[in-house]
Length: 517
Image 1: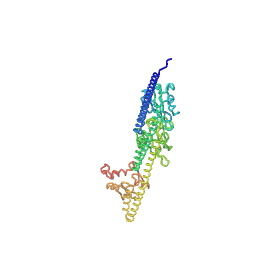
Image 2: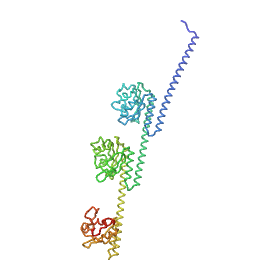
Image 3: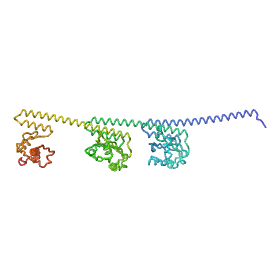
Image 4: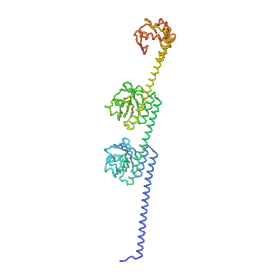
């Protein structure tokens, strides 16, 4: 028993105070280090977020650079080995972006970017839960997961990209050792997932705006062509075909129009072969091919894969074998509920057209019908005006002829001469003859626009009723005779002699008239 002195007690108090100071210094130093580390991590996260936002603002309408920047920053800040970004279409995932992935995994995605549902069970659990998936050791949960067997992933973090309650895709980062991610790292990937959804939505809206503007521009261009070519429909067809290819992302486009009982190709744009040149290629009307069925059924026909539709579209299947087409879309041209043609698109790969693209093609089909109808109506108006003009000319000619007859009661020659001249003019002929029949022969009494040699021949060779000339047949048969080609009838020898007289330097013209006759 030996009590401590007051001096020693004071000394121990001093040591105690020093121990407290040391502890406090250590605590403050650790707190400062923790604060510095947290500040550094926060700064890194803010920098990464800022970089991604910069890429988003600098690449409007482009998702590839945005996804690449997100993956790169997520893998770096989360101290992961590699990362993937996949989009979800409601049925399956598809790899869109990869960062720092093993070469074996890159080769696998190039072969097939769609993960198999039966093996990638962890990945395909996300559409059901729509929550974060964080697995410390993937080989203990599903050793057959492709990302584990091919890329050697052990610890994984999958964060869903959600638009409201709809799954758009996922961002996944992986470590090849067992080392779970921290809560802060998980929150960082969540923020990237939210930014990815915003970028996707902004791109969708921007693309819709661009497509709408392109469609309006194309529609305006076609309408301008219609206004510039009111009497010709071909320029309209030639403007519609390339616009349809461009807006609908097709390989080619064609327009078919009803010609008799067949469909004729009247316009085509694109590198794919057709069944004949424009203006000549014809196909029968029928339901064995997409355009024929659209024409018959009077509604759009969309075939996703012609090579798989041999029974439904036997003709289309044969076309696909010859031309290489896979997906096709055909829209009928309808006028007052009746099909007058068809507008079709083709793709060489199996890639169905969207509802918007179908609507765009329908708009072009309507414009084609407007152009055809405008041309038809204008032609009808022009025909009617032409008929009225001809009728007026005929009435005027008849009136003038009656005046001549009235002034020349005892002289028929002026009336016959005017009758021949008016007949040639109103019938748009080259020359004309007026003959009188005396009961036995036809003699020329008037002619219009003939050479002296021709008149001399006709006067020296009066016509007897028979089959050797058109006038002789009219006298023989007592009705109108209309020959489309006098040289096609070997009995019409008189016509050949008339042609010979019109060629003064010909061999026939130098022969005597008697011998010629």
